[in-house]
Image (cartoon, rainbow, N blue to C red; front, side):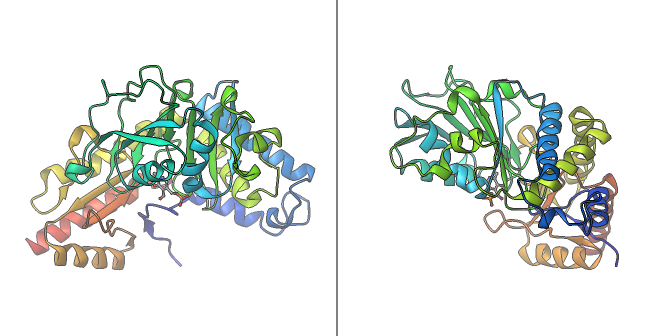
Length: 360
Ligand SMILES: Cc1ncc(COP(=O)(O)O)c(C=O)c1O
């Protein structure tokens, strides 16, 4: 059966080479006589898998030594609670609300202290990133929170906010490893892996060492304390072993591709093909302010709901899957993560051109 071009926002396409390699190792992982799915997380073979995964991630992102890498469960959404539970010493935090995911994190933080919405782009359906150069940062804020790439709305912070010396916490779920980043500018960087890295069900949190303490909010569960997982090398309990294994393979794939500078150039090239067409099309329009456009998630509309629905249906029939936009934006969304080949974006644009000619 032929594989389709999968534009899903997540769980999303994985590199075909990685899937093939995993398939080859499915019944017998490197002479162990068993699948990684069947393997004890305490076995030497698995210890090597997790150690290599961490080492490769550290190399790809140039993670400084004073940051810990944690492979955690509960998805990105669990971090919405874990972050305030572990960081809200003064019970104050500032949130920049640029979409549904940031809003969920902001709402969750209100359970633990005073969460201030210091900027938002909700007035225009989150279609832009607000100016964050001089925000009213609270003097006693424990951290400033952003969602760096907004999966649903297709916006990305091209510059980090001026936090006026406060700790920055960032959700990078939908731009993780799509380009290099300077980890030292953050207190915590975290992301669900099911978009750009691996199968669903895990979040990677990169946490500055001095933030990992026993001094958490009273009542914080053991499992939601960063220190529990840092002290146990992400194996306090049984981790998501197979997901760690797959992420490790994707890290090796990224290294073989040439690393994150190369991925950035490739992602820019892919996004440009689509955005250039959207800018010249008479039928399709991008929904985001050009300067804030994401390289990963590209929402677009025709302005006619019936035409949008027909486009999604006909695209699917042509092997271009999961193009339906989020219900709050409508229209279409193409997620073009690392694993989407250039040919996938070219096929999408060719299909859009044809659809436009036939229907205008
Ligand atoms: C930016 C962002 N943050 C958080 C989440 C939630 O992730 P999870 O389903 O792993 O909790 C998503 C999921 O789509 C997302 O796009």
